[in-house]
Image 1: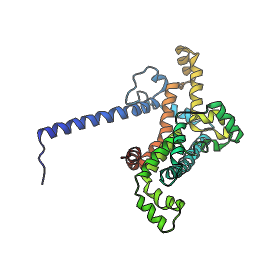
Image 2: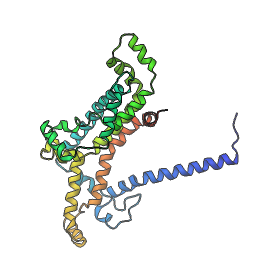
Image 3: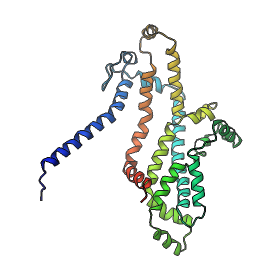
Amino acid sequence: MKIKMTKDDIIFDSIKVVMLLFLCVITLYPFVNTLAIALNDPMDTIRGGINLLPRKFSLVNFEDVLKDEFLGIAFLNSTFRTVIASIVQTFCTAMVAYSLARKKFVLRVPIAVIYVITMYVDGGLIPTYFLFRKLSLINNFHVYWIPGLTTAWNMLVIRTYMKGLSDSLIESAEMEGANDFWIFIKIILPLSIPVLATIVLFTAVWQWNYWFDTFIFNSSNINLTTLQYELMKKVQSANAAIGNTSMSDVFSKAANQSGSMVTPRSLRAAMTIIVSLPIIMVYPFLQRYFVTGLSIGGVKE
């Protein structure tokens, strides 16, 4: 039977639609605007006024970014560190979370407190550098994933989710002779896929976007460079090239080159599009777990 909508229902639904359209517009506009700037002639972009569509179409911004000789190595390193760190760090964090979620583990409270303290207290950059050097992690690919094997915030989210799982499942497995490791692998992990997928997404985005560890620990080895670090260097080079140059000299130089001179703003836009595409392509596969995993893992009744 079809339910007849009242006047109040129609007004309420109309307000919801308008609000959702507004949220879609303000969410998509920055990305569309960045894409328009990336596809616009950089010298024309200086004039401003680029909104949703490029005024003077050009691929020179992407050509300038992609011609970097180290971009291929950087892309592979960023991909490897993202994949390895997302899988290994999530698995290790889940093991810690499971241990701290078990009531029979007598040290679960003090260890959890220690983890929380690490969220607010940090050793500092210099002690960290000396520690990593002592551990032979300087100029080493492993510096990208070993230091973050477990993180406090991710552990708390996963632990809260695991606390909501039925204890009878674990008790039944223990009665059948299963130890904690096999209970974790065979029962807990399959039931925790929503929250684990959420943590994988968080970790992947962090690893893909982070460049500071490359700058501090691996900048002297070009074979260990990452995509974000190489793109950051290109922006700094473009800023330095234009910083001490007047606008008339910029246009004159572009005219003498019979083309367009890439500007920092156009370069940043092109790089933003390039580095965002891999995450945008991965996100739809994890999106269905995202809301469920975060809400269940973040709230405990």
